[in-house]
Image (cartoon, rainbow, N blue to C red; front, side, top):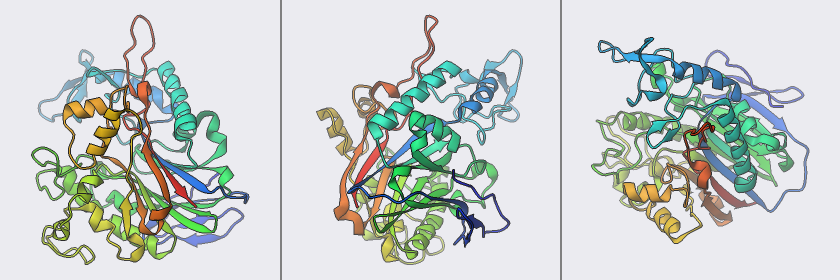
Length: 441
């Protein structure tokens, strides 16, 4: 079992090691989860995966979600919110983007319109959720089959243990249950690794200075001691809505002052860079992974060093007042300090010629709607968000040890189908496909 140390006053916290002992937290990193497993002979390779599970919650959270979205609402023209009303529209059928529904708290539960079939919301049921859990467990065991898995958009450790199914007892799990919003991060790693492991948070990335509704997710850090090496894995889920400057009409241009998500992502860059620099100073090799909500391949395609910042200043120096970052990849992983020199690992999509071609093209260009639909179809990857969001960024010191990085298909498990003729609906396991890295030890 992993013990989580509760929130303390101020920026410093305690971390407990089994059998006693206290380690002080550093640079605003909070949380405390220590696990020490029996030593064993290490395999020659380590497999690491990342998977955004798309608003995945624990089974016990399902009834509250269903009940709140079964209620009826009428839009209040004075406030712009949807108020409860006996003769209103069911929450599942409110199509307005980011609708604010009375009693639906998105810091504690998913929105109503998570699962869609042809644009129509598909309400989850207990039976369809249990089927989805079975499929999640199959994907994790038979397709991902990783030693370490970083999850995003999960409600906590219970939700991940349920997704692991029969494999749950073979993994240690750490998260930050009960803190921040329901879209949490979790690490799971095999007990058979025999690794000394420590988890902590970089809270500053959550932008605690912002209003509660605007706060985003922290970073979750896992330190592993394996085969005489210290690996530091950083699980990210950055602000959504600012994907690429290659988008048509450039709404995803990072310094775009008219795009609020880009402004929020801009605010995350400094604490992210500071947190990674502090981790690098502690030694070990960095692997940053997860849902960046940013196409790092498009940023890597920008070769002009002056393009990193709007004022042309060097990425290794302090960001001048009034300047904005144009290139997250080159700003954060700038090699200052040296441990932060890192590269986005090329991710391939083995399979058909169409899949491989579109996957490769997505690294250098924005895919059109038809291309995205083809890549995400059940015949290809099977996930709606098939390109440009999920990445591995690995320390340059490990470049020669990277053996393979692939995007794994979901096939028909990525589809949602409404219940018909008395049958239960089928729910997509996720709108993201998992990615997996093989690393030589």
